[in-house]
Length: 393
Image 1 (cartoon, one colour):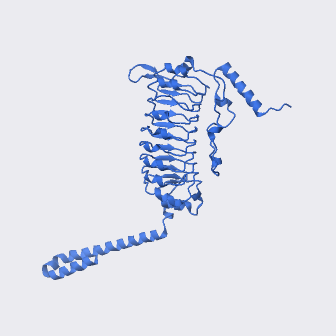
Image 2: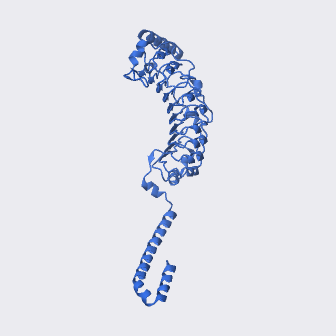
Image 3: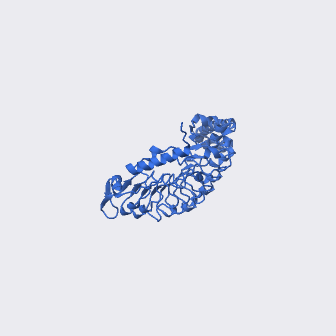
């Protein structure tokens, strides 16, 4: 019986793919995928170890398919969407192009389509999409799951939404020149820093999950940022987030965060996910107690979660929560965590206030009865009665 090694099988599989590409033109990458996705995380290994595994080193430095496929005019025509009005000219042109799962490596033909506004080239083998930059009206560009490494468009544009996840990007310097961006998705790349994003003053949504980022330095200059996803990185603190007054949703799970103090200034924060971090001191939750809009928190699989009465202590510190660790916080949960001494003190003050109201009501009644008689017959007695009732109250 003939035995085939993994190398032989891989070689035969690659040759078959090349033949299919040459014979049929388009082959879906999903139909020939045999391994794990490029965006698979290594956080489970790092969770119990300080050894850093370089995810980028495990990714191929060249496209997995040797075949070259060029986007042609005929292919563009098949991928064009419905016509629409061209901004500023009043003319009619095709504004949308979608060509995915095509193993494309060259899209130079797009330089002849300057009116495109929305382009979807995801799930190809592109390492260069600069021809898209010729369109001055391009607002949405999806180049996720390709082979981009450094630059995307190469020059500033009117781009509003950029989806570039699952590539090989190792810098955001060029992306930072697209100052009209409001949505930026860069998860599953090879980024180690994001300092080049400081010019994106209109950015509202940012996803940098599953990279190799050690610091969020550079985000403090994004005044409109509302949603930040930084899961699966190497973050140890969140200090740069102090300069984000509009931040509402923060996800930073699967990192190495040890301190929450920087979050105390995020007055508009509504949801917080810090699961799988290194939070040891549960008293740090007190720094979040003044965030009145904070309603959902997750601290699962942090060291302090193993402490006795963790849930009740967390709810007592953050009484405004409606959900903790993906479980709803009911009114009964909040009542149970209030200390007995506080309840007794509250009851005592309620009783004293009730009795004081009764006494004041009786004194008022006495004054009303004696008013007409006393002041007319014996002013001295009325003065004495008034002083007595006032001193008693």
